Image (cartoon, rainbow, N blue to C red; front, top):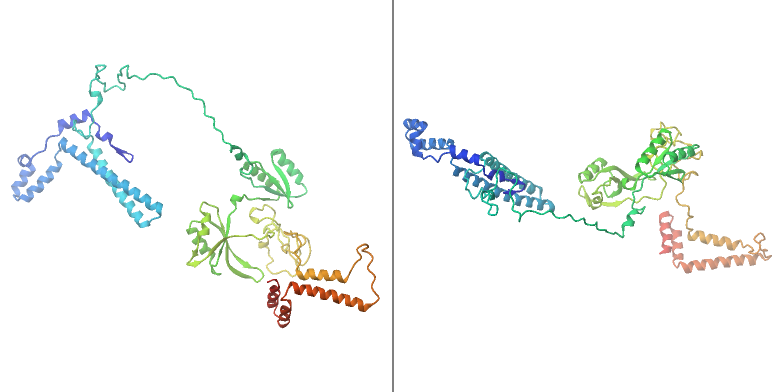
Length: 512
């Protein structure tokens, strides 16, 4: 009999030696009268105290110490086995209820109560099994509950022999003997997958982050050394850096060690899967404590790298927006499901990076961050070999010198610097006023199309020339009025107000 990994077959197996021991040593139940005349303890107590209650107590104490009969042992084993079966059934149903509660997200108190109940059932099962081990196998040899009829006890009618209990082998008739069958060699089944070639595409292979080497006077010698040791690397020139693409992560680590030994400056690229998830939490209080916000998010199962509050650099004011870097784990996308923090309604949105050039806080160079920078530190204030935040100059510099263009009056972080990278080279879209002004300049300064170097002759009649100019201007004004019917009303309103914001709003009404 076995349930839930527990086996009691050894407890119920027969043993001739043990049965002989029980038959020779254990006696039949002793009656109270026999105990009264043969037990010296009861006779002694009976002489001292005659009450019936004292006699009964002494009889119970002595009966516990007396040996039991073999049938009492059999009955005890049956009771213990029944108790084990009942508690195992209860434990199995209790496990099922606990599993259902955990899958449905039930109350923790109910789950804990069920687990304690399961422990009680298991404890009862262990106690009963300990008693069964101490009792041993059933001493009643012909007990149908605990002993099965062995086939070896019967005579084999075909061979006319009894089974050998002490031998591991049995005599089998030729009819029932197994025959050696010839082993068949099955040909392997050929399977074809027509989409197998898609797994060999370069898009499915993991991309190894590049190493961006800063160009110096001896960069060619460095590339030759890398090519001689790692011939399968590829090099490209990107934004003033040489991008080194290794063919394996192990070779990438070796190339980094080689560059460090040669004291080369380089910047490491970061794999997309290693980059943190950037999100913005809106509508929290402006004075929200960052450490408290970190504890709240980590209590929900998210791993936070950094929390920073967005601000307006021109007005030097803080926004109720918090930029948070979340480690990419299995449940990192669940952060978008957050609706409230500290009983306040919030919005969780992905961070939309602006098309701006980033500057490194370590080397004051562009297009990378200080996290992956292996260049020498450089200060934008004093051009010293230290980071800007460690500079001794804490006050505002009146006439600074740029470390990139060596010009005066601005720092290297000024976007108007000639050396500052430009992100958008497209010319701005001209406004309607700019187009109108350019058209007026063309009409007032006509040029001979055949010979641009020769201007048209000016008429001698000055009045006629002034009339033509006024006519062209009136024609332009008429076209503008037809295009914008509310131009006259807005022009009157512009003369009455002097507020810049109101004038801007009036001009915007032209396009309504």
